Length: 294
Image 1: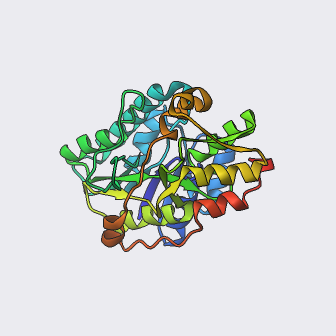
Image 2: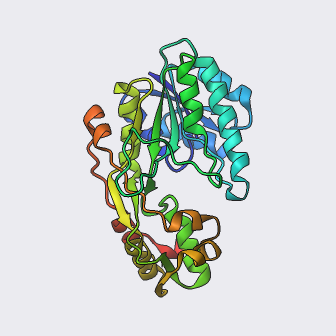
Protein backbone atom coordinates (compact mmCIF):
# COMPACT_ATOMS: atom_id res chain seq x y z
CA UNK A 1 0.00 0.00 0.00
CA UNK A 2 1.22 3.50 -0.82
CA UNK A 3 0.65 5.67 2.26
CA UNK A 4 0.77 9.46 2.45
CA UNK A 5 2.00 10.47 5.91
CA UNK A 6 1.73 14.06 7.12
CA UNK A 7 4.12 14.96 9.91
CA UNK A 8 6.39 12.30 8.45
CA UNK A 9 9.57 13.86 9.86
CA UNK A 10 8.13 14.54 13.32
CA UNK A 11 8.56 12.63 16.58
CA UNK A 12 5.75 10.14 15.97
CA UNK A 13 5.48 10.38 12.19
CA UNK A 14 9.13 9.46 11.59
CA UNK A 15 8.69 6.24 13.58
CA UNK A 16 5.46 5.44 11.71
CA UNK A 17 7.35 5.83 8.43
CA UNK A 18 9.93 3.26 9.53
CA UNK A 19 7.21 0.90 10.78
CA UNK A 20 5.31 1.06 7.49
CA UNK A 21 8.39 0.53 5.35
CA UNK A 22 9.50 -2.43 7.48
CA UNK A 23 6.07 -3.99 6.89
CA UNK A 24 6.41 -3.66 3.11
CA UNK A 25 4.39 -0.50 2.51
CA UNK A 26 5.50 2.40 0.34
CA UNK A 27 5.53 5.79 2.04
CA UNK A 28 5.05 9.25 0.60
CA UNK A 29 6.07 11.57 3.42
CA UNK A 30 5.23 15.26 3.70
CA UNK A 31 8.38 17.31 4.34
CA UNK A 32 8.69 21.08 4.62
CA UNK A 33 12.49 21.38 4.51
CA UNK A 34 15.43 20.05 2.53
CA UNK A 35 16.66 18.33 5.70
CA UNK A 36 13.29 16.60 6.03
CA UNK A 37 13.43 15.46 2.42
CA UNK A 38 16.88 13.96 2.99
CA UNK A 39 15.74 12.22 6.17
CA UNK A 40 12.78 10.60 4.42
CA UNK A 41 14.86 9.42 1.49
CA UNK A 42 17.42 7.97 3.92
CA UNK A 43 14.60 6.08 5.65
CA UNK A 44 13.51 4.55 2.34
CA UNK A 45 10.47 6.78 1.78
CA UNK A 46 9.57 9.11 -1.05
CA UNK A 47 9.48 12.76 -0.04
CA UNK A 48 6.59 15.07 -0.91
CA UNK A 49 7.73 18.61 -0.27
CA UNK A 50 5.09 20.85 1.23
CA UNK A 51 3.64 21.93 4.55
CA UNK A 52 0.40 21.93 6.50
CA UNK A 53 -0.63 25.41 5.36
CA UNK A 54 -0.08 24.45 1.70
CA UNK A 55 -3.44 22.86 0.95
CA UNK A 56 -2.51 22.01 -2.63
CA UNK A 57 0.43 19.90 -1.42
CA UNK A 58 -2.00 17.99 0.83
CA UNK A 59 -4.42 17.45 -2.06
CA UNK A 60 -1.76 16.12 -4.40
CA UNK A 61 -0.21 13.90 -1.74
CA UNK A 62 -3.56 12.33 -0.88
CA UNK A 63 -4.49 11.92 -4.54
CA UNK A 64 -1.27 10.01 -5.22
CA UNK A 65 -1.78 7.51 -2.38
CA UNK A 66 -3.83 4.49 -1.35
CA UNK A 67 -4.21 5.71 2.25
CA UNK A 68 -3.42 8.71 4.43
CA UNK A 69 -2.12 8.93 8.00
CA UNK A 70 -2.41 12.45 9.39
CA UNK A 71 -0.08 13.17 12.31
CA UNK A 72 1.00 16.73 11.50
CA UNK A 73 0.04 19.47 13.95
CA UNK A 74 1.56 22.89 14.60
CA UNK A 75 2.44 22.75 18.31
CA UNK A 76 2.39 26.47 19.00
CA UNK A 77 0.64 26.73 22.37
CA UNK A 78 0.55 30.52 22.17
CA UNK A 79 -1.70 30.21 19.11
CA UNK A 80 -3.43 26.94 19.92
CA UNK A 81 -6.88 27.85 18.52
CA UNK A 82 -5.27 28.98 15.27
CA UNK A 83 -3.32 25.71 15.09
CA UNK A 84 -6.56 23.76 15.55
CA UNK A 85 -8.24 25.67 12.74
CA UNK A 86 -5.28 24.90 10.48
CA UNK A 87 -5.56 21.23 11.43
CA UNK A 88 -9.28 21.26 10.61
CA UNK A 89 -8.68 22.71 7.14
CA UNK A 90 -5.98 20.12 6.43
CA UNK A 91 -8.24 17.23 7.44
CA UNK A 92 -11.12 18.57 5.36
CA UNK A 93 -8.93 19.03 2.27
CA UNK A 94 -7.54 15.50 2.49
CA UNK A 95 -11.02 14.12 3.18
CA UNK A 96 -12.42 15.79 0.06
CA UNK A 97 -9.85 13.93 -2.05
CA UNK A 98 -10.68 10.58 -0.43
CA UNK A 99 -14.46 11.02 -0.36
CA UNK A 100 -16.40 8.23 -2.05
CA UNK A 101 -13.45 5.82 -2.08
CA UNK A 102 -12.41 2.99 0.22
CA UNK A 103 -8.97 4.52 0.88
CA UNK A 104 -8.29 4.63 4.64
CA UNK A 105 -7.72 7.95 6.39
CA UNK A 106 -6.38 7.84 9.96
CA UNK A 107 -6.77 11.15 11.82
CA UNK A 108 -4.79 11.84 14.98
CA UNK A 109 -6.51 13.16 18.10
CA UNK A 110 -6.07 13.09 21.88
CA UNK A 111 -7.48 10.73 24.47
CA UNK A 112 -10.64 11.72 26.31
CA UNK A 113 -11.35 12.17 29.99
CA UNK A 114 -13.96 10.29 32.01
CA UNK A 115 -13.77 11.51 35.60
CA UNK A 116 -14.04 8.67 38.10
CA UNK A 117 -13.24 5.87 35.67
CA UNK A 118 -11.00 5.02 32.75
CA UNK A 119 -12.15 6.58 29.48
CA UNK A 120 -13.03 4.11 26.72
CA UNK A 121 -13.23 4.31 22.97
CA UNK A 122 -16.95 5.13 23.34
CA UNK A 123 -16.32 8.33 25.29
CA UNK A 124 -16.39 11.68 23.48
CA UNK A 125 -13.12 13.48 22.81
CA UNK A 126 -11.60 15.84 25.34
CA UNK A 127 -13.04 19.28 24.70
CA UNK A 128 -13.41 22.52 26.60
CA UNK A 129 -13.45 26.24 25.84
CA UNK A 130 -9.73 26.37 26.63
CA UNK A 131 -8.91 23.28 24.55
CA UNK A 132 -10.71 23.56 21.19
CA UNK A 133 -9.07 20.56 19.49
CA UNK A 134 -11.40 19.68 16.61
CA UNK A 135 -9.58 16.93 14.72
CA UNK A 136 -11.89 14.14 15.86
CA UNK A 137 -15.08 16.11 15.27
CA UNK A 138 -13.82 16.97 11.79
CA UNK A 139 -13.07 13.30 11.06
CA UNK A 140 -16.56 12.24 12.18
CA UNK A 141 -18.11 14.77 9.80
CA UNK A 142 -16.04 13.27 6.98
CA UNK A 143 -17.25 9.76 7.80
CA UNK A 144 -20.82 10.98 7.41
CA UNK A 145 -19.86 12.21 3.92
CA UNK A 146 -18.49 8.84 2.82
CA UNK A 147 -14.83 9.08 3.81
CA UNK A 148 -13.24 5.88 5.16
CA UNK A 149 -11.85 7.68 8.20
CA UNK A 150 -10.91 6.50 11.69
CA UNK A 151 -9.42 8.27 14.71
CA UNK A 152 -6.23 7.49 16.60
CA UNK A 153 -6.34 8.94 20.12
CA UNK A 154 -2.92 9.55 21.61
CA UNK A 155 -1.83 9.72 25.28
CA UNK A 156 1.62 10.96 26.40
CA UNK A 157 3.79 9.35 23.72
CA UNK A 158 7.37 8.89 24.88
CA UNK A 159 10.90 7.68 24.50
CA UNK A 160 14.02 8.95 26.26
CA UNK A 161 13.94 12.26 24.35
CA UNK A 162 10.27 13.33 24.37
CA UNK A 163 7.24 12.50 26.50
CA UNK A 164 4.21 14.39 25.20
CA UNK A 165 2.99 16.98 27.71
CA UNK A 166 5.56 15.73 30.21
CA UNK A 167 8.26 17.40 28.10
CA UNK A 168 7.00 20.95 28.86
CA UNK A 169 6.63 19.94 32.51
CA UNK A 170 10.36 19.22 32.48
CA UNK A 171 10.99 22.67 31.02
CA UNK A 172 8.89 24.30 33.75
CA UNK A 173 10.71 22.34 36.46
CA UNK A 174 14.08 23.36 35.05
CA UNK A 175 13.07 27.03 34.77
CA UNK A 176 11.51 27.26 38.25
CA UNK A 177 13.90 24.98 40.12
CA UNK A 178 11.14 22.72 41.44
CA UNK A 179 9.28 19.75 40.02
CA UNK A 180 5.64 20.25 41.04
CA UNK A 181 2.44 18.25 41.10
CA UNK A 182 -1.07 19.28 42.16
CA UNK A 183 -2.49 18.28 45.54
CA UNK A 184 -1.69 14.69 46.46
CA UNK A 185 -0.53 14.01 42.90
CA UNK A 186 -2.68 10.89 42.59
CA UNK A 187 -4.22 12.01 39.31
CA UNK A 188 -3.09 9.90 36.39
CA UNK A 189 -1.99 10.42 32.78
CA UNK A 190 -2.03 7.59 30.20
CA UNK A 191 1.11 6.86 28.21
CA UNK A 192 2.65 4.71 25.47
CA UNK A 193 6.09 4.23 23.96
CA UNK A 194 6.46 5.73 20.49
CA UNK A 195 7.34 2.40 18.85
CA UNK A 196 4.14 0.82 20.21
CA UNK A 197 2.15 3.77 18.92
CA UNK A 198 3.69 3.49 15.46
CA UNK A 199 2.82 -0.21 15.33
CA UNK A 200 -0.78 0.57 16.25
CA UNK A 201 -1.07 3.04 13.37
CA UNK A 202 0.07 0.29 11.01
CA UNK A 203 -2.39 -2.20 12.47
CA UNK A 204 -5.21 0.33 12.15
CA UNK A 205 -4.22 0.90 8.53
CA UNK A 206 -4.16 -2.81 7.71
CA UNK A 207 -7.02 -4.11 9.88
CA UNK A 208 -9.05 -1.09 10.99
CA UNK A 209 -12.59 -0.08 10.11
CA UNK A 210 -14.15 3.21 9.11
CA UNK A 211 -15.62 5.14 12.01
CA UNK A 212 -13.51 3.41 14.66
CA UNK A 213 -11.77 5.17 17.54
CA UNK A 214 -8.52 3.61 18.68
CA UNK A 215 -6.70 4.24 21.94
CA UNK A 216 -2.91 4.10 21.64
CA UNK A 217 -2.59 3.54 25.39
CA UNK A 218 -0.07 1.13 26.89
CA UNK A 219 -0.28 2.41 30.49
CA UNK A 220 -3.77 3.29 31.66
CA UNK A 221 -2.51 5.97 34.02
CA UNK A 222 0.77 7.07 35.57
CA UNK A 223 0.49 9.17 38.75
CA UNK A 224 1.60 12.78 38.37
CA UNK A 225 3.43 12.57 41.69
CA UNK A 226 5.54 9.74 40.29
CA UNK A 227 6.18 11.70 37.09
CA UNK A 228 7.20 14.79 39.08
CA UNK A 229 9.46 12.69 41.30
CA UNK A 230 11.23 11.22 38.27
CA UNK A 231 11.70 14.69 36.81
CA UNK A 232 13.00 16.04 40.11
CA UNK A 233 15.50 13.22 40.36
CA UNK A 234 16.67 13.75 36.78
CA UNK A 235 17.08 17.51 37.17
CA UNK A 236 18.29 17.28 40.76
CA UNK A 237 15.63 19.76 41.93
CA UNK A 238 13.16 19.47 44.83
CA UNK A 239 9.72 17.93 44.33
CA UNK A 240 6.73 19.78 45.79
CA UNK A 241 2.96 19.76 45.94
CA UNK A 242 1.08 22.90 44.87
CA UNK A 243 -2.63 23.75 45.05
CA UNK A 244 -5.00 23.73 42.10
CA UNK A 245 -5.21 27.52 42.41
CA UNK A 246 -1.43 27.75 41.99
CA UNK A 247 -1.35 25.40 39.00
CA UNK A 248 -2.23 27.95 36.32
CA UNK A 249 0.43 30.39 37.47
CA UNK A 250 3.07 27.70 37.94
CA UNK A 251 2.49 25.66 34.77
CA UNK A 252 1.05 28.32 32.47
CA UNK A 253 -1.08 26.82 29.70
CA UNK A 254 -0.48 23.31 31.08
CA UNK A 255 -2.16 24.21 34.35
CA UNK A 256 -5.35 23.01 32.66
CA UNK A 257 -3.95 19.46 32.53
CA UNK A 258 -1.81 19.31 35.65
CA UNK A 259 -4.55 18.39 38.12
CA UNK A 260 -6.77 16.31 35.87
CA UNK A 261 -7.26 12.59 36.45
CA UNK A 262 -7.20 11.05 32.98
CA UNK A 263 -6.96 7.23 33.08
CA UNK A 264 -7.72 5.66 29.70
CA UNK A 265 -8.49 2.08 28.69
CA UNK A 266 -7.35 0.52 25.41
CA UNK A 267 -9.00 -2.88 25.98
CA UNK A 268 -11.20 -2.70 22.88
CA UNK A 269 -8.38 -1.43 20.69
CA UNK A 270 -6.14 -4.29 21.77
CA UNK A 271 -8.86 -6.85 21.12
CA UNK A 272 -9.89 -5.48 17.73
CA UNK A 273 -6.41 -4.99 16.30
CA UNK A 274 -4.37 -7.56 18.22
CA UNK A 275 -2.13 -4.84 19.65
CA UNK A 276 0.21 -5.83 22.48
CA UNK A 277 2.44 -2.96 23.67
CA UNK A 278 5.95 -4.07 24.62
CA UNK A 279 7.89 -0.78 24.86
CA UNK A 280 9.41 0.68 28.00
CA UNK A 281 7.24 2.53 30.51
CA UNK A 282 7.03 6.31 30.86
CA UNK A 283 8.84 6.27 34.21
CA UNK A 284 11.58 4.04 32.79
CA UNK A 285 12.18 6.48 29.94
CA UNK A 286 12.14 9.43 32.34
CA UNK A 287 14.74 7.60 34.43
CA UNK A 288 16.97 6.88 31.44
CA UNK A 289 16.83 10.20 29.60
CA UNK A 290 19.74 12.65 29.51
CA UNK A 291 18.27 15.78 31.14
CA UNK A 292 21.26 17.91 30.21
CA UNK A 293 20.23 17.53 26.56
CA UNK A 294 16.46 17.88 26.94
